Image 1 (spheres, each protein chain N blue to C red):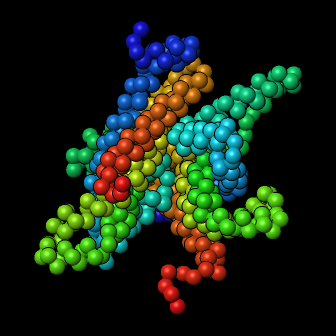
Image 2 (cartoon, rainbow over the protein chains, first blue to last red):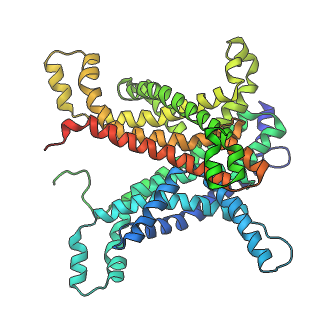
Image 3 (tube, chains in turn yellow, red):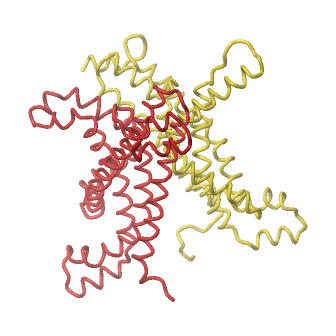
Length: 241
Length: 238
C-alpha cells in the first residue's frame, strides 16, 4: 500500500506530477481542437446544404471519408503526410535545415477533421430544425443571406445542436488518447512511461481510466448545465400549465 | 500473381502490391475481432440492459456503473489495462486456468472490445426497450401473459426495430475502433499497414488501408439500410 502511495505521489518519487502534466496536454488538445472542428463542421454543413451540386458532392465525400476511416489511421496519414509535404515544400523553397511537424498541431488537425465530419451531421440536423418561416421573415425584413444566418439562424442553432455537439465533445475527449502514438506527452503517453518504469500496469492504466472518467463526468455535467441555460426561455417537460 | 496483389498492380504501386496480401490478411483479422466482440457484446449488453431496467436498485446501480465506466473512458486505455494488466495477475489467472487465454494479445483485444461494446449496446437496448409503450405491457398483462413471455413476444420484437439503426452505427464504430488493436502487437489491417509503412516508407499504403476501411464501413451501412427497410416494411403505409 505504501508503495502504491509513493508511486502516486507528487515529485521525483511518484508519477502524479507527470500524469497531471499529461492530463493537461490531453485537455488542451481537446479544447484546441474543439473550435476548429466545430467551425469546420458548420462550414461543411452549409456546403452540404448549398445550391451547387459540386459543393454538395464535395461535402458528402468529405463526411463519408472522415466518418468511415479509423481515427488512428487519419492521425497517421495527417502526421506523416504533413511531415512529408512540409519537408518537400521546405527543400523546394531552398530553405536550409529540416522542418518538423509538431505532434500537437498534427493531432489537432487530424482530430479536427474527424470532429468536423461528425459535427457536420449535427449542424445539418439543427439547421433543418429551424423553421422556414424564420428565414422568410428575415428576408421580408430586408436582411441579406449572411445577415439572416448570423442574426436569425445561428443564435437559434446552438440550442438545437447542443445535445449532439455535447456527444461530439465526449467522443473527442476519448479520441485524444490516440495522440500518444505520435509521441505527444499526453495522459496515455505518461501512463505508458510509468508502466514501463514501474511495472505496475494495472495501477497506472487504472488511474488513467479514472482520470478520463472524471473528465467525462465533469463534461457531462457541464453540457447539462449549458443545455439548461440554452433552454431557459423554453417550456420544459412538455407539460401544459 | 494472386488476387491480393492486384490492387497494387492496377494502381502501379509497388508497396501496395508487395504488402497487399498481408493487408488483406490483416483485414480478415480485423473482421474476426469485430464480429466476435460485437456478437458477444450483444448478448452481454442485452443482459446488462435488462439488469439496469428490472434488476432492482442495487444490481441496477452496478449495471449503471459498468456502462458509465466503459463509455466514459477511452478504448485504448481499457485495452492497455487488460493487455498489460493481465500479466500482473498471472499467478491468480494461472490458478483459475485463464492465463492461457489472457497471454494471447488477440484474446485480450477481443475481451476488451466485447466488454466495451457491451456497455454501449446496453444503452442502446435500454433505450429501445424503454421506448416500447407501457400500454403494450398493460395489455399483455391483462391477457395473463408472464413477464418473460411479454418480453420475448411483445417487447423485444418492437424494441429490436428501434435498436437496429444504432446497432449498425455501433458496428461501424467497432470496425474503426478496432484499429487500436494494432498497438498491442496484433496484425489486423492497421497493424499490417503499419508494418508495410515501416518497411517501405510509402505513405500510399495508409491511403490504401483507408480505402479498405471505407469499403467495409460503406458495405455495412448499405447492408444495414437494406435490412432495416426489409424489417420495417410492415410500418410503411402505401
